Length: 73
Image 1: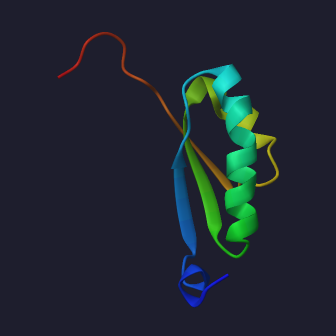
Image 2: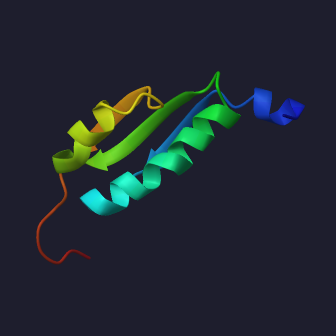
């Protein structure tokens, strides 16, 4: 690990929108945490998938959001 990676103390990941894709994303998030073990890793995720991430040990914080319905500009 180089000196610059030591300076990274917060990481935000915008999670995918579907259950299957969420599970497929777990190894990438786990690798991020392994590469930056001192960093605070947060996941921004649709509220209906927040519980899946809350059980994942590599994540320090789950930030749920409600997705708007319909078309938006």
